[in-house]
View 1 (cartoon, rainbow, N blue to C red):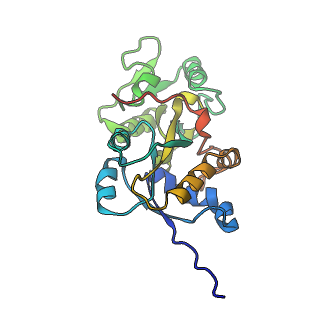
View 2 (cartoon, rainbow, N blue to C red):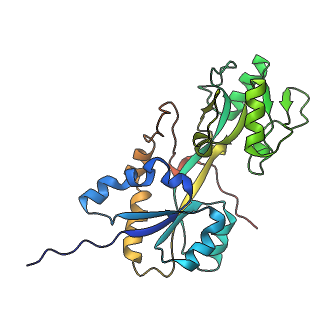
Length: 253
């Protein structure tokens, strides 16, 4: 009797960080080797591209941030079935590599900011919509807060480097950027963790296999395993957290 052919991989459309460093493949490799879930083939897209990419190609599931409005709108339209929280990624404090204010090891963002104020150090205000409410106000009078002339992460990082100051940005995008003299400090503060969901594509003919994979990603064993993953060259920082560790997501209007 001829051996049964292995099923083709499930096609997953994911945001960049999910593929960074081979994270998702690493996370499921043991289950794939054991034959308990179907292998994955990943395509990467910015969240703004999800609608177009799903219209142009055949995919079985999508993994993106729970707060991302493009993904939420696809779910509302029925293009994506109900999503399941599967993991969370951190925003990081970015500062001088030698960490003169001693923020590394802080238990939370508040702890880190208290240490910074006690040291007399400066914070660079990063005017990103998802970060503003987590930072000292740009016009704070009780501490040193710098407002860079250039907007966006480039301006915030340049100002942090120039002034020996600290700022806030996503850990994964920072790790992909050349930023000599700067380093990331990850605290694991729930407010700094952003949940990602796995959504089955509503039209996939392989829904049972997709559901098995998503159930694996949400399982206690995988939630424990993902915390051990590190990005290359940065063993000090945890790159992923269990979905349950993140603060609740506020639905978009």
